[in-house]
Length: 104
Image 1 (cartoon, rainbow, N blue to C red):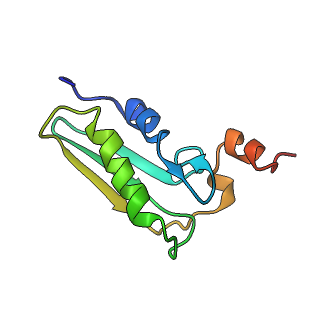
Image 2 (spheres, rainbow, N blue to C red; image 1 turned 45 degrees about the vertical axis):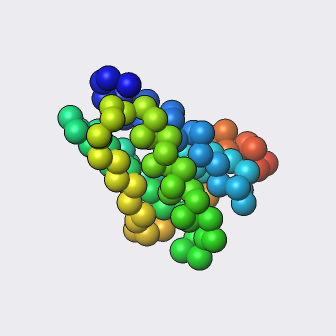
């Protein structure tokens, strides 16, 4: 990769990362709170469905990996866990809610 991706391209890459307990990607689950792309770095603020999530390290490592694959070599990739606001099911996309049968 020779140029920086935009925020949407980063989110699209993050759709490759699944929460294995939920069986759904972290974007549609609403776990990705923010993406910030600058000239030399990508920062992602994300959360887990619970602070006790046993898959936290695996999910954040996979997030870093898929981002690193779409940015120029040497780009800083910072995936930060945030807990405020806490995750709730209303943060899920319609696709995720439908997947779980939570649509009206």
